[in-house]
Amino acid sequence: MMGMFNRSGINKSMVLRGLADAVLINVAVLTSIAIRLVKFVMTVDAANKIDYKNFLWNNIVGYRGCAIRLTLVCLVVFSLSGFYSYG
Image 1 (cartoon, rainbow, N blue to C red):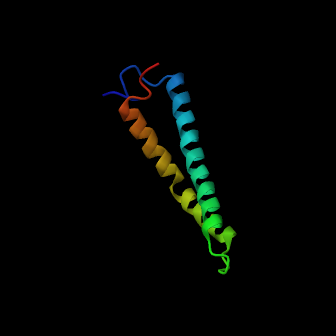
Image 2: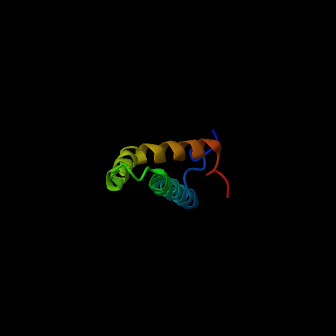
Image 3: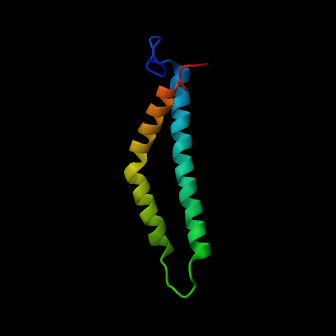
């Protein structure tokens, strides 16, 4: 089986790449939340009173609820794809 779970075991460079990928995944999601907030602010009708803090808070709560699962799924997929078995 290719990936992080090969016969040679897990070494320091594999763990470092896994941690870097985990950070990058979560930074990408947080950046998308920020871009979504900017888009929401720019496209909302000025006549409607929209609470931007509530919009942002709902997105952060949703992210918090799935961040660990998203990170684990991405790391497993990357590992099974062989990202951590080389170099």
